[in-house]
Length: 436
Image (cartoon, rainbow, N blue to C red; front, side, top):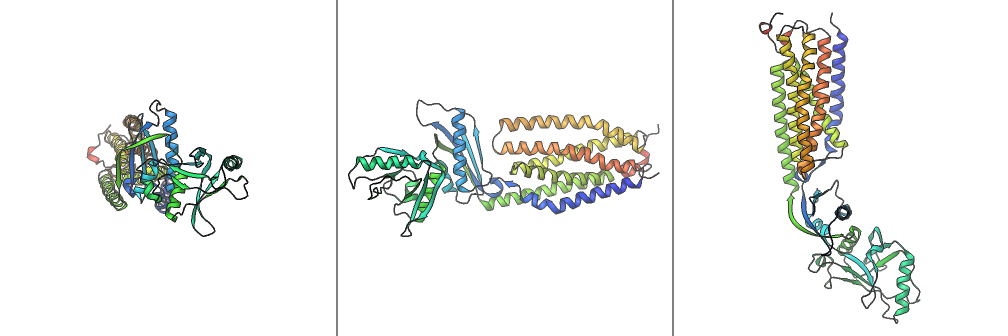
C-alpha cells in the first residue's frame, strides 16, 4: 500500500526549503565579507624588530603590535581587516576595499608621537597622556582648522602648565607642542611642515593661572587636510616595535570584481555539469542529489556569513571542491543502493543496506580530508587558511545535506512503497537484477 503522506511530506519539505533559499540567498551572499582579491585592496608583510638593540621580541610585544595596528586600521574604517602574526618576527596586514592604498600604507607604518615641551626642549608630558581616540578636528574663533585633543588627566596638564608659568618669564612661558617621527618620513610632506617636528608653541594665559583642562586646542596654521591627518595619526597610537615592509601586493577594485565574476561563472558551469550528470545517470536519486546540493551551497554561505569569515578566491575554490565531495558522498550511497538492487533485494531493503554500508566509506574519506585541511590551517598563512576554513565548513555541511538530508528525502519515497517494483527509477535495468 502506497503511503501518500510521505510523498506529501517530501514536497512540503522541498517547497519550504526552496522558498527559504529564494527569499534569503541574495541577502546572505551580499552579507559575506569579500577578501582583497575579490573587492580590491592591498596586503603588506612587515618584518618586525625591537626598537632597542638589546631588546628581544616576545609574544606579548607582537600581540601589542597587532593591537596597535588594529587601532590604526580602525581610523581607515576598514571592515574585517586581517592582521596576523607569521613566524617569530613577521606581521601580515590585509585590507580589503581600501581605495587610497598609499595613505593607508603610510598610516600603518608612520611613527609619530605627540609631546608637550618647554622652550628648552624638556619634555613635560608625552602623548601617552592622550585619551584613546581623543584627537579630532575643530575650528577656532577665526574659523581656522585646529587639532583638538582630550587628555586623560586635567590635573596633570594643570601641573605642567603651572610649572612652565613659574619657571619662565613672561614671553618664554610657552608650551611647545611637537610631533616626532622619523626623518624623511612622508608624514612631513603630508602635514606641510618644513620643520618636521614643531606644531605650535602657545604662550600661557595672561592671567598667569595654570590650565586645568582635559581639552587642549592645537593651533598651527593648518590646512584642513593636514589637521585631519594629524588627528588620524594621533588616534592611531604609537608602535612598540620598528617595522620594515618586505612585501606588498595591491589589487584594483575592477580587477577583483572581474576575478570574482569569472570564478562564479566557472563555478556555476561546474555545478551545472555535476547536476546534469547526476540526473542522467542516477535518475530520481539524481533529483534528490540536486535538491540537497542546492541546500548544501546555501547552508555553507549561511555559516560563513554567521562566522564573519572573509571569502577569497581560494575560498570559492574550496566551496566548489566541497560540491564535488558532497556529490561523491551521494555517488557512494547511490552506487551501494544500486548494487543491493542488482543483488535481488527489494527496493526498501536495498536502500537500508546500501545507506548503512556506504556510511563508513564516506566517513573515512571526509575525516582524512578534514585532517589535511586542519594541517593547512595550522601551518598555512593568509589565503591558504581561508581555503582550509571553507573546506572544513564544506565537508561538515555535506554530512548534514549529502548524507543525512539525501537519505531523509530519498527515504520518504522508498518508505512510501511507490517504487517497490520500479528499479529503473534508480538507474537499474530489470535484466541486471540477479534472482535470489
